Image 1 (cartoon, protein in one colour):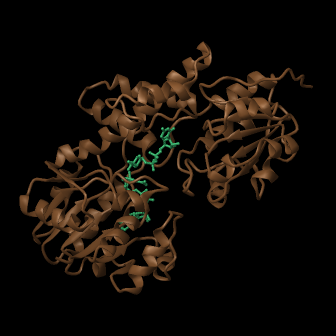
Image 2 (image 1 turned 180 degrees about the horizontal axis):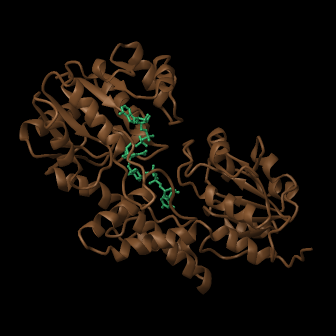
Image 3 (image 1 turned 60 degrees about the vertical axis):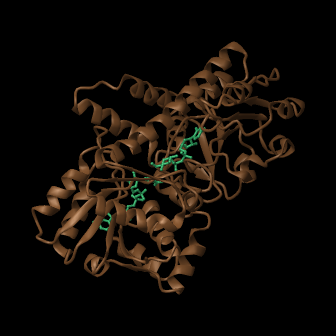
Length: 440
Ligand SMILES: NC(=O)c1ccc[n+]([C@@H]2O[C@H](COP(=O)([O-])OP(=O)(O)OC[C@H]3O[C@@H](n4cnc5c(N)ncnc54)[C@H](O)[C@@H]3O)[C@@H](O)[C@H]2O)c1
Ligand SMILES: O=c1ccn([C@@H]2O[C@H](COP(=O)(O)OP(=O)(O)O[C@H]3O[C@H](CO)[C@@H](O)[C@H](O)[C@H]3O)[C@@H](O)[C@H]2O)c(=O)[nH]1
């Protein structure tokens, strides 16, 4: 059965959810407080770079199933379900900031005129849905239910993940409300896992924390490989062939960034702390990541002696490929450290450049191509493994770099190829390629 759905918040999660629900036949109205964004979307323009999203968005707008408004009242009118997809950013102390959740709860309490299921897509600490329920319940007489339906999409493959996810988690204390959300999701053909609200909230944090743990673990093994002359490529492959371990999320590099892992791991440490549980393991995961994000600067400092006066080309600025999102990107930390060390930074990203300019240190310069960035630079830092960056040839590096040295934070290039090309090449947990150069 086709339903009428309101989606509150049009970030990655809200917009992709809205577009996907309309694509499977529901009538969706997305609402956001950001009027500039709403205007853009009403004209069919996606405010984010996400492969495949614009096309689906335009299609569903044209077919009359998807619309955008800045008026909550309009979006909520006779909606069967109201999806909350606003941000839950990190506060200074690491806890999740629920101010946007509260403002939506106020919006709902003011404008809810008929029964609806309120679905929380945002990542929220355990107990938040109970809070939303009592917050709205004490402010309106209109009946409603609350369901937790955490989101597992990844940026850069959000559309693909939404239509081909591994599972849909529905946490409901009211079976009728849970059934409605299961029915809404049926056209996706993805297996549904039903549980209670609190467990659903915890599944989201536990999943992100586990994936972050896998990354920090493999990064520590890579750091050991560096010291013990083993090769992380083979080590990860050999580990991953054990099905109990699995071969995913074993890519060593300069740590995890993005809008979720950093904030959600910090939030879970705080959630545990609130019930007097010290989450020792997760604290170590966070600490490893902190060091890992700075690793290329340490390696370059060791190589050059001092970075003062050196020009470093920073290739890739977004936190991962196929997104223009700069939240918690390793480039932020690296640029800051390099500038502090007296180096000149020239940044390049195929898509995230405009967003990068808003958040990277002012001293950073920009090139309009990868070749432009490495031209006359002393060294190249590979920060994001965009296809365009991984396709650079050894000839291009040699022709353009002053010192022919590459610090690869994403293990993009083949060690043997670098060796044959006589380039100095440092990656993460793999053999070092070093000629005997002297520096002034
Ligand atoms: N980004 C991801 O890949 C991802 C994946 C899974 C889960 N999540 C979780 O989903 C949630 C949303 O993340 P995001 O990255 O999509 O968010 P975002 O910060 O990119 O966007 C949130 C949007 O909500 C809008 N908003 C704030 N208050 C509002 C209100 N009262 N009414 C209407 N709109 C309002 C903002 O203007 C903004 O456009 C977070 O809890 C996040 O942890 C994110
Ligand atoms: O083997 C790996 C895999 C990832 N990363 C890094 O980890 C970060 C996050 O990558 P990824 O998980 O692919 O992207 P996100 O869009 O942040 O997605 C994560 O965070 C989302 C928000 O909660 C969840 O919905 C997703 O399931 C979860 O994968 C990036 O900096 C990657 O470079 C690694 O270093 N090594």
